[in-house]
Image (tube, rainbow, N blue to C red; front, top):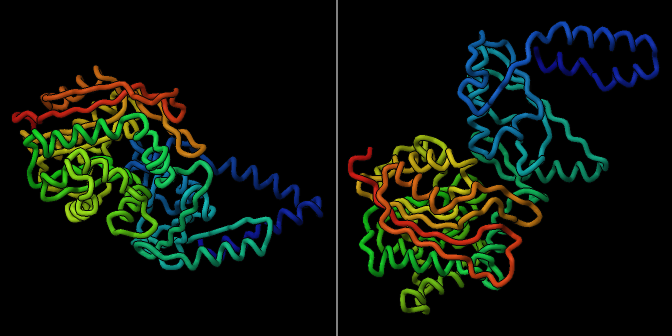
Length: 417
C-alpha cells in the first residue's frame, strides 16, 4: 500500500456521490460485505507490552494500521516512543505503518512528518484536522508548526485544557502561601519538622546519594536533605511535573514561588533569614531530574544507578499504585535502588481516595497505618519510626478525603538484596 493508493480512494468524494447516484449505494453494500469477509479475527491488544498481542505470536504483518489510538494509549512522551517500538515488533522489515489522528487533542499533539525516521520501515502519516472555522484552523496549524521540535524531530505542543492535570494549578491549590491546603491543614509543618529531625537535627541519616521517588513538581522534601547528602536525584513519572520542577531549579521567572515554604523550613532550622541560601543549596544539590515508574522492577529503567544511601518519598504511593497489592510491589521495586542498611524516609496522608485539581478529580489508593507497616516490612525494611497525626484543618476538607498524616523512617535489612 502506498500513500498514492490511499489518496486515490477519496472516500469523502465517494460519499457525496453516493447521495446523488443510487448506483453507488450498491458499491457501499459491496464494500461492507468485503470488510466483513476480510476481518478474520478480533484480538486483545496492549501496546504497552513488548509484544502487544501477548501471549500470541503471529506471523509478522505486511502493514500496521492505527488511527486515534496512540494519543490515548500513551500516557506521556516517553511512553509514546515505547509504544511505537512495541508495535513495530509486529511488522516485517520493509513493512508499512499507516497511522492518523488528531493534533492537539487531550494534552499533547504529535507532528510526525516529515522529520520522523522510526527505523527500518517506512511511516505513512495521514493527518486530518477538523475545525468549524477555516481561519481559526489555519492559525492553529500555523502556531503548531512554529512550536519547537523535540527528540527525533517530533514536535510537541501542550495545551491547558479542562480536565488535564496541570502542575502549577496543583501547586497553587496545595502549597500556595495564602491558602494552600497542605499548609493550612498542618501537613507541611508536620513533614518539614520530621525531615529536619531526621536529616539535620538529631538524626544521623547522611551519605552521598539520596533518591527522591515521585518528587512531582515539589521541592519541600529537599530542604533538609540537601544539608546531609552530596547529591539528590529527583524523579517523577510525568513529563509535566519534571518540567515544572526544572523551571524552579533553573530559576525561570514562570516557576512556582516556594519562598514561603523555604522560609518555614529555615525557621525550623533556626534562621528564617537564610532562605535564599537554602534555595541555592537545593539547586546545587539536586543534580538530576529523572523519569521514574514504581511499577517497574527497576523504577529508573533503563538507567542502572549506583545503590543509594537513602530513598525519600512523599505523597507518591497513593497516586502511583492502583490498589493495595501494587503498594506492596512498588515498595519492593523501590528497595532495589537502595543499599543494604540504607534508609527509607516516607511521608504522606492517610485514607485519601481522591484529590482535586481545578475541576478534575484524581483517584488514590487509600493508605492506612496497618497497610504501611505490613507492606514496608514485607519489602525488607525494619521500621525505626512511624508517626501519625490527624489533620488540623478547621473545616471539612472537600479537595480530598484524607483524615491524617504519616511519617516513617525505616532501614533496609542487610540480608535484603
